[in-house]
Length: 248
Image (cartoon, rainbow, N blue to C red; front, side, top):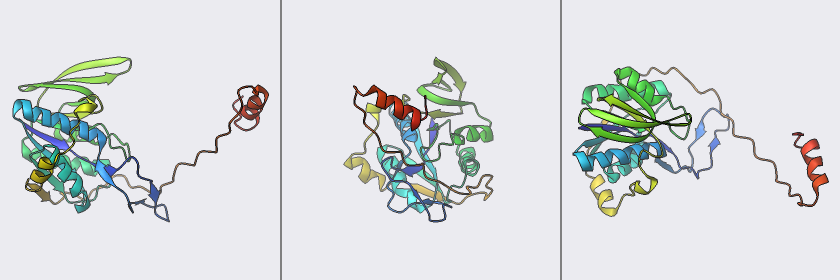
């Protein structure tokens, strides 16, 4: 079985987000980059299938050379090899199109990815990849078992969970629960050293078509200072809620 895992390089959740002076772009100065957390669940599941079913795991990233440390970490976690499409991602469609092109020629039985990236939270790449490949798609997956040419996926729905059986090849977008958090793999020294010699293929993009363009960015307004009110001072609390918060 061949598995393709889509990896996005995103700012660490502790990073302070800023934009350029003209608010036309994200300011990357001083940002620490990590594997998109949702993708990490998908990658860990792929490595588990590698261990139990002898699957080969390839990670793919659409990005410039600055994403290679994150790709190498994916290799250190356990992927066999990696592909980087050498173009800066501009929108979901262009990213999905490049992933689908690689997958089309790679003969992959299963494509795993996170349900969304934590930077722009678009959540549309996995579904676009499935559509471009004309393959079944399961989103918000919190459990996955593969049996031969079939996969049983558990996904979250309103008020519960749903189990779906799909024929492979298929695209499955995972999230927290696809594997337990305690099972997420932290690369050890052996993995880090072996990652240096694993194949990382760089391919050029097949298209420059972009359908969405960011016009400007604004930071979230800072929260107002907290006012502490004594539990005995009910009148003051009511006044603040009425005159300042204007909620009553």
